[in-house]
Length: 396
Image 1: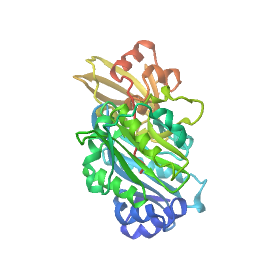
Image 2 (image 1 turned 90 degrees about the vertical axis):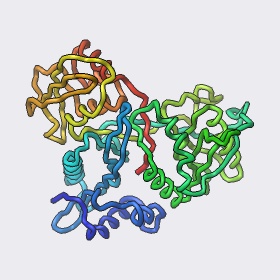
Image 3 (image 1 turned 60 degrees about the vertical axis):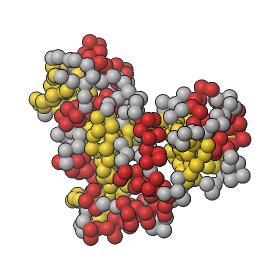
Image 4 (image 1 turned 135 degrees about the horizontal axis):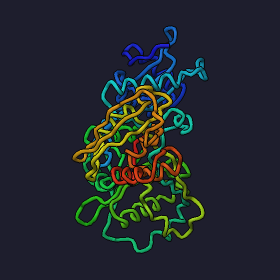
């Protein structure tokens, strides 16, 4: 088995494997992706005796972590031909892809799992969940009392109108960590893909013409599915729900995803049903030194800490390190290729990722038994890497 970056000549087989594992060739997203967005030079393939039997697409993104923009690969389309399944190909493919990302100088990577347990075995952990709210449309009425009549509705008609949404997204994500940075290229790509699949974009604006919220939604089924639901004010959220409520002749219920930061559920009249969390995005350390040195530290810390990292997949990460802090930055040196029994801290590689992303504090990770260390050192890490509200809503 050999792994390498795809060539143009591999495209037919890459498409075959995608169609077998995901959307068929006549699906709108398949056509959009391979006509417009597919990038062979950002695709890793596995070759077994001249047959292409596995793929992972390394979609290039920028995410903002603790206020810093980091280049990452969003790993999607992890696919294995049935003739080689349960032979360890998936594990080898992931390791080869991580090695490629290390060579590219990326310290972190992200992945949306079909089965989180599979990837947790290899060092990924979930850093972002979402609320999933499901309600009958007629049950929305109690939430729509005291609507602000100064807000009006509109619909986006073209990807070239992306700037209308960008300000809302930037305001919504500003206090968060782990989200995708969207500039013109990312917005146009996103909107082109959802329009290709028949998804609509509705928005609410105030009497000054400024947008305060928007949603991506799909009609055609009894349940209206809302894949992005973003707003800057509570009145805008209520107005968006009212916008969806006005589709009662076209659907029976609505399901919308939103960030875990929202606490509007507290005021729902019936909280017993229709509220759940969805495991959404996983992160992983590609390179311990690069990842830690890329993340700023918000407090003045002095001194050095010895720590160990256990990585079940990537031997270049496994070992003992010393981190020192100076002027808000970490400096990391790897001292040993094994985890020293005298190390003051010992992380699983997934726990270190969650700490850097802001999903959990050091004390919380110690409680979950993915980090070992004395309380005084844990408190230092709590100050260096305080917990953040995490969010992301990229689907590919």
